[in-house]
Amino acid sequence: MFQVKTFNAIAPEGMERFEKERYAINESDTPDGIILRSQKLHDYDFPKSVLAVARAGAGTNNIPVAECTEKGIVVFNTPGANANAVKELVLASLLLNVRPILQSVQWLEQQTGPNLEEQVEANKKQFAGHELVGKKLGVIGLGSIGAMIANDAYRLGMEVIGYDPYVSVDTAWSISRRVKRAQEMAEVLTTCDFITIHVPLLDSTKNLISTKELAMMKPSARLFNFSRGEIVDTQAVIQAVETKEIAGFTTDFAQEQLLHHPDVLVLPHLGASTEEAEINCAKMAARTLKRYLETGVIKYS
Ligand code: MLT
Image 1 (tube, rainbow, N blue to C red):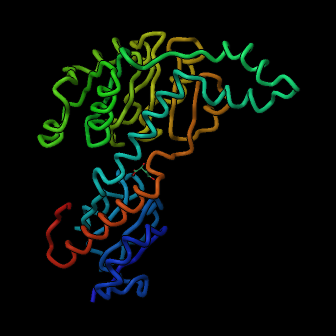
Image 2 (spheres, rainbow, N blue to C red; image 1 turned 60 degrees about the horizontal axis):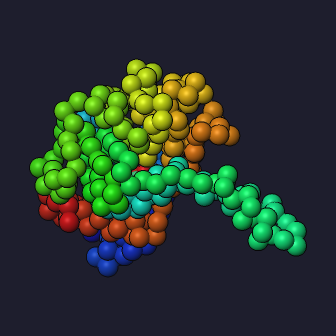
């Protein structure tokens, strides 16, 4: 019987698989496999028994991957399982940037008086926005999330250009032929109205967007980071927004310095926070871990 340890709970739909197969869950300090969501495992003293760590999500930066590899522990994530949730939030954020939806609702809630409707009609001009159709979107990183965003933004009527030096053959096939591929990131930075980043956090992607890259962007351009906070240099982006070098920054990663800035929209890491995505990730992580423990093969399905 295999022993599995969970850290912060994954959706019960994933755990059911282990229960059905009579795996022991959280019953011993020497598990064969670990399954977790976003809990940081850096201080965890991996017992020798651990063969694999399954992350129910995309990023593996909460797991000491190099240390695991050294010990022969396999680490895997759930590629694509929460991509749709992230894609939908990125598209919503694009809309929030061009239509002052949040600001207009806040304003409206403060209005009172017998002629509310007339008052609103007379003052709503201040909340006129723009449309996405015809605007150019740059997608940096064409993994499962970036590819979905590129395709759907194109379907919405945007001109789309993607950049990724390492795109997989399968993903390359899934991207619409209408999505142009840039040879250099500079082409995306210098020409786009909106730029969204979808790369994993690695030593090579830390501060991928810093002073030099921000200076290449158009003053009307807006940057979106739904990858990991460390991929955009926080001080550099604050400076770029304050000096109007770029028009706005939206991030899914809360940092104190970014809050309360009129041209910065900060979300509390909600990209994958949908019930559907939680279930997809939990099921995929459980399936993959079970298969690996039983057969020694890593195969996503
Ligand atoms: C992911 O890496 O899967 C997403 O950022 C969601 C998360 O970590 O909660």
